[in-house]
Length: 163
Image 1 (cartoon, helix red, strand yellow):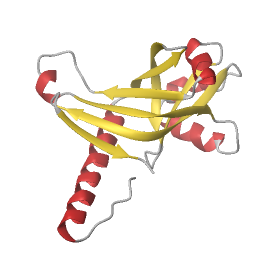
Image 2: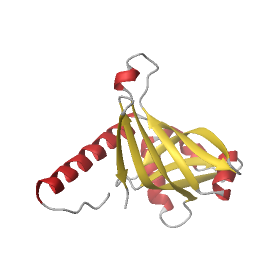
Image 3: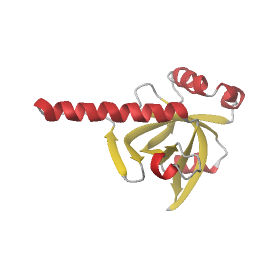
Image 4: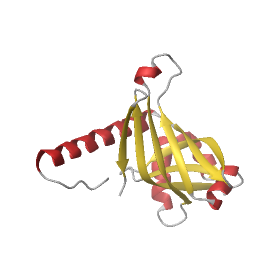
């Protein structure tokens, strides 16, 4: 993730915080199957639920959609996207225990030799979607994450910049 520079205990503290943040993000991603994808077209925001899977290094998030969807058209027009993954349960306890990660980045269809590798990652998390994913009308998309924002307890915000 972000390269940490510095010396002594401050550098160790930064590395420890980054490691903890990555761990929290991974834990949340493992526990959730759905995310909210945000796109826009001509200044109008648009949100969708998508089944997602993260890359092993957290540098990318993957999802599949039919090419005949508004979200696909929006991404074709403007590749900038945001994704929200959270663990809310719609209970009062969410106010003290819920966590959410927002990822910002750019999306593009995976069409090269890497497609089989990405598809394997995606299907490992969502095997029940194999027929949908393999349909010729569907696109496998990759979001190259620039920044993760983790919010816990509605006020504790941490940032992780992906390099």
